Length: 94
Image (cartoon, helix red, strand yellow):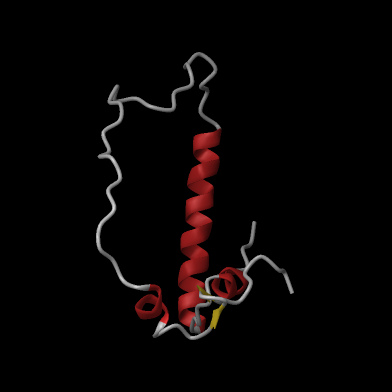
């Protein structure tokens, strides 16, 4: 399977040299091949798990702390709209 690294780079807003494209295409191919190997492992007798350590609620409670004002947070933004960061759409395929 061949991957379009140029498309992935465009989605990530990255500019890649031809050497980088070849390098990342090879790495992506190797990663997918490894995942395909994992897919071949027989796991029918293994119970599904989503948490294996037994730890629960290891995160602290949220606490409100002083932060940047909206004005300070947005002052270096390339573009804003109604007090929010405005960015190019990334989900369109056009």
